[in-house]
Length: 612
Image (cartoon, rainbow, N blue to C red):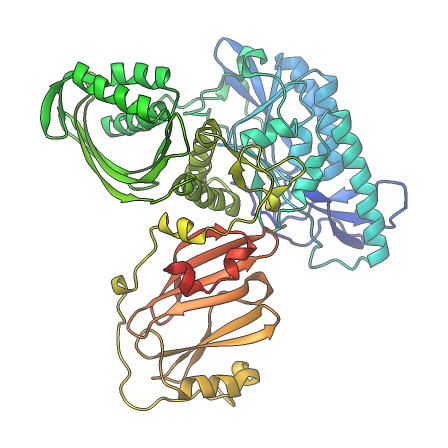
């Protein structure tokens, strides 16, 4: 529905243009004609599909409609169309479905929204990214779901012919305009600095705490007019044609939940409640169990179960429980069986004793009564000498990577963003904070609240929390028979001619990966390398998809009898070290999983040491 961030195409203007990316949060623009110092030039958005902002009504039962601004902000937009629609409809709320666009136009809409006293409200099921963020903060009151507002840094368009001095002048002028506007809207201008830490081909969707911190959101949901109470689980269907008459607007009736969905919702509520303070946790447990329960192999009364829960809660009053993503399995007939794996962290009331690990669980839940009728499980891993919720933090980083690293509304990204936002307050409740005062984006990390910044070096503890693929599960699909065939550097394989000596020497030593392949790593400077994989049967070389300056300190782990290859590398922009696992099927590389294992220091260790 929305264009990919970072796409460029030909301009829709016949005049000669100078392409320049807008500063920080707000997307790709084009400076038309001559840049004048001290003035903001005319900015356009580059896109394969030109789409001006249109205004649509979302009819709300027994309340004024919500106005939807849909499309890309362009120089030809008429913000007064919004004013006329607000006056005609009596709407008090504006929402968006926009990937960004013209910075000056977005600011104009934001100022108009503020002058009309309208509020802004954004669901994650829509989109408000890049320049749209400027229009959103014009709301007199502003509310947004976590992950609904996206920001990123600037970049030059490939078609740009702008000179360096003109670029600096334009950046300075637009930076000043944006910062003045943010201050005018009572938004912390440090938001601009945050955006600069996010690559232009990435998108940072703000968390709830970040939106509060930078005052992107303001006012409580209770202060918004009634028309803001849009059904979050089943948003209104927006007509695809521009501004359909209100009489034609339709909403999709709510879809009844299946028992499987209800069981999974109960499971989430159960572990969320058990992660809270004792009084709240035990109140939930009182309502969660039937009068008789098959409890770890014995039939007991609800009172027996609650007494055991109370005793445990008194011993371990600080608790975090979170189900591992995608570990849940549910099946329902008369009752629902829910199985899965939960990670936990708990602390004693006094002293420093802590407990951390993973456990399998199995619940039988009755959808007719919403009660647990059977419970069992077993501990599968514990962390000796645990001092931090490393498994929960590892979950958070994995979800954060998926949430930040994906664009659009894919189910995977939406689920990852939701899991991350649900886990954040659990970690905060047990004394862990994300980021410190003055830190931005790539500098931020989880730490004990109130402690100064220290490098994270406990990679071994992090790796214990990772369910890494095993080499034995990816056996080689063939083995080497006969002599190695070397590449044809003058013909078929001439694109690899620059590295012919290194490739010949590497392949001449015989295969070292996946039966009949040679992995050859070639340096390109300090901390920089690339990888060639040669097929010893056919002599054909190919490139491994990681390396160069984007993947610094690249280190590999692989075996002759397995298709599994692990790659460790550093992202300088975020100061994060990653390990990725790949399956090589002789023609392509399939990414199996990717894990954040720490800061730069983690990548200074050999991958084999980190994997132990």
